[in-house]
Image (cartoon, rainbow, N blue to C red; front, side, top):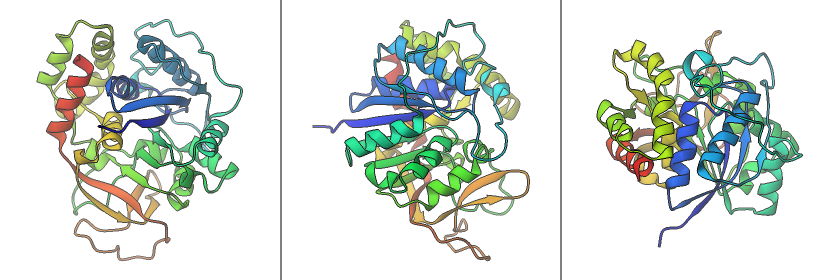
Length: 318
């Protein structure tokens, strides 16, 4: 019998975040127990409105808490050019403010973990500001979650000459990210752009979604257009990477990951952009400079992308 994972989702609800909620709701081994909002793909108010809209589409009645509207330091950078200003492609959906708890996202994350230690998994899909604020309330927070899986980071150092996608969730709040990677934990898994950028929802998969006449599939396809507008400029094809859904898939089925490395992760900046890096080169050696010690993070370095994409499509077209 497959064990059900009970998951708290922290999200900056853009297009691939919405797809992730659809995917989790369609998996028999997943139960969403709460959702928290954070800025990132859109402003926080739009993120929480989008949570309400997707939860309504799914008939999902779970606690929703509002989170950070800006990073712990600096100013918020909003990815409206990728997800549309409202985070769902600016398609005019009616998105009233959902009923929310009277506590902040950070307070909810702390309370749920304290009430149910070792029973919940935390899936972080946006900037890590809510987790950073929660760690200020409870420095041992991550030890109380069964696992914490985050979409963000850039893996180990890439081979010389390799160019990676922007590590947006880390860059949007490197201070909070540094606190997360330094904190004690039961298990912390980093699913970074080094692997999510290779997990492509291709034309045939998108056609399968288009051919499915259910409210969930119709919504999933309709919000794709803004996302594909952005990525066609990268690849010349109307296809997208499954960034956030892959993190959810690995939380539920570690078999989607075919290689990983355990070690300390540091936040590194070139003066313009911050990335979360496993302190290893592409061939497994430590970098040639001093770095901060940190507890081991499991860093995913390769995935079975075809199997995950097939599962994602099967779940959304079921």
